[in-house]
Length: 379
Image (cartoon, rainbow, N blue to C red; front, side, top):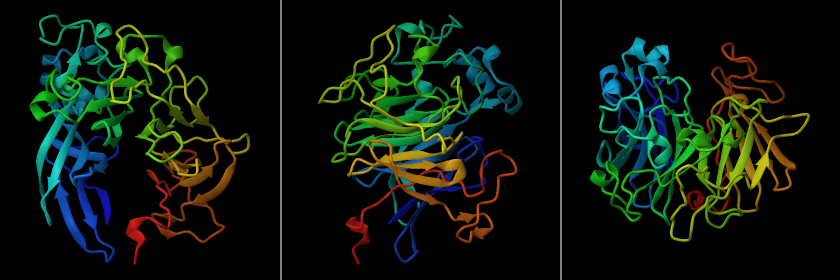
């Protein structure tokens, strides 16, 4: 079946990756399940993932008023104007839904960024402390840039069944966060419990050590990335992470597809030491395009490692897909032939996006390649 998240005109807005509804269709285009998850106080956005038990994990924003932000110890001098204008911030949380077909579902687990904050601005608050000593917590100041209303700006969610862990691509921090799914909801709100004994605290984070007071700007590796995923079992690099690193904020702006090997043991335990940048220091493999065709998309986009060791890359803002070998040879290229006005005749180029220079109207969030032996294709 086809599982998709839908862009709706909800009552709450993230300002990017709008969602609010999830649908499942069969091969005959029958809608077999639908879930609306959008109110005045929360909204599903960007990405979803089906778990082995059939439940769905989703990225969700939740409304926190200006007063709630101040009560949580945020420094209002760090806010971008949109927080005051909207009177709120919309941090991220994760929810697990047990579907009830044909409509609706039950929330069976959730994890909130808001439960794991630390700040050194207001000593009167319970979460006051030294963020540099607690890399397992989320500093209200992030990487010390001014904070937008859509603060975390998570854009992908992935699941590791072997470890029972969730990976979150946090564009607002230029990091990937790993959290423990083996907790109960009450444990996920605290700092103990679950298989790793850490409750809902971050098990691991990587990409921008400035966010937890370690290293310098030269240690930053992710730059507002999208689609951080574990490379699946059976594929070269299995267990590593791969993503489309959009490149916003690099000294020389360019995009890359990057793979790194996390510091984790066979049981899913990570090394995260206060005051030290999480290892490894660098990527295992990277692709930046060619001189004649450099890789660049300032948002969306993704990458997938294939069983033959090649990597499918979606350069989303121009709707271009390429397959490259491990030695970085392009062996396949495809341009999305669909835009708002319909299909594009082969050989013609997509319309330019009038709102974004260098981007086209055939943009694509992410692509996956499936082999002809994929079970869903039988019949």
